[in-house]
Image (tube, one colour):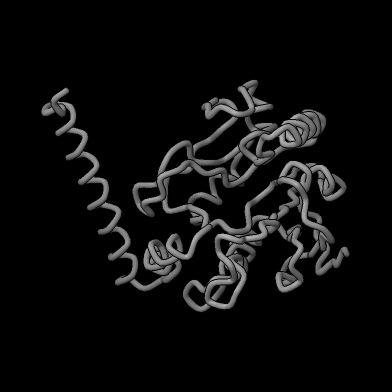
Length: 258
């Protein structure tokens, strides 16, 4: 199903993938994890609102028709795919001259989206190699992939390799597509600054209810425009950075006994 909400002449087409079955979320709070409430709006509606400052060409790709929202087109996927790589392969017809993939379960800061849309490279992935000291997530995350026309064929090849690898036991995620393009082993965590720009602020995804509860206050502060909310957020960020610096100094000058 392809529902077109609005035509635009903008060059960048933004595809927001909301394909996760979300067993970890399990419709907690009675909503899809893509529609979790954040200060008078939902996660996905907020992403659409912020992205529209840069592009009117927004497409939501999902199994869930509840995600047909104002301000974006909707492509209905009729079956659950094996992995992200398979979904990306089957939605190649949605690509435009410049294409941006976003994960629908991610809270993007405004600063992160500015960096993503300011990209000038033919290909760039945006993610975080390791944990988030603000939201306390322990693992790295991939948030977005941006590619221009000259790289579309290379992206297709990377998707195909990632999908084939998933059929042999791999995961077929955005990570594997980035690794394939960067010439890294598909199943090993690796950093290539040429192909991956790290986003290390409050930007993070939501998988479990505890992820939501742990970070919702921060997300709410970031969404609000009040001086008090911003002051609370900046103070929190400052104290986290100070603690991290103190711990680094302790480890350097007072290493743990072996």
